[in-house]
Length: 83
Image (cartoon, rainbow, N blue to C red; front, side, top):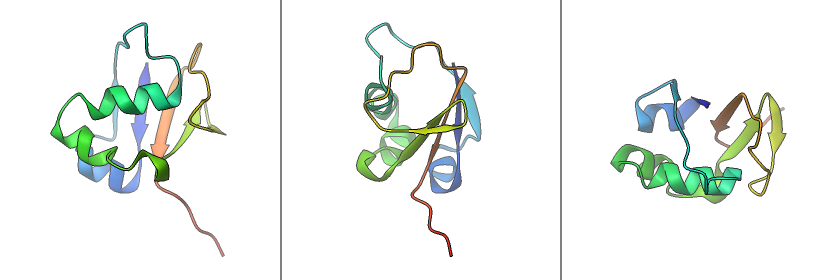
């Protein structure tokens, strides 16, 4: 699965994107963020406060409980403000 990181998530992880093979028990965005936070110190730092991290599956914004089954890419980004 392709993962894409934006803004300070990218800076903390040190990658713009990566391809990962997920374990079968990772089924939702929340599961994925938990799994990522356990991979290494950089990911743990990026996903330390998962409540503020936003996600999109195949360019559609989703909630943490969203299923990742069939996803082509998942993007993670900080909250956005507009004006």
